[in-house]
Image (tube, rainbow, N blue to C red; front, side):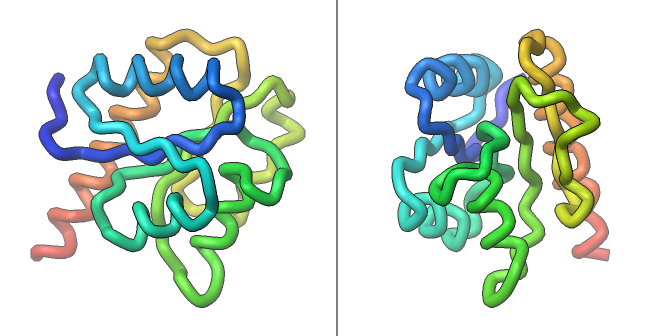
Length: 133
């Protein structure tokens, strides 16, 4: 399925994972934005053109988890979906305070990744329709 003009923000410090995720997303028709800094990530999200954030679940200051917590808190309060991945056991991952968050434990298949992305997009479309009613 091609996703015309749908952007996904990728936040990962590992070039190999950036490349893998980018390839899979572009293969599915998404436009990929890679953020190297918090400023680049915030700018992409504030523009309102990003469907979701995809990145590794880690506690680094410039990591995807820190970015999502910052964006879900004051002063932004963005309710943007996040897709995290890591080798950490799912039971040890804390996403309770993030409303639309998904976690993939590595190793995961590209089918699993695609399923989560389809879920994120379908929820976004459903919410968009609710806003117009």
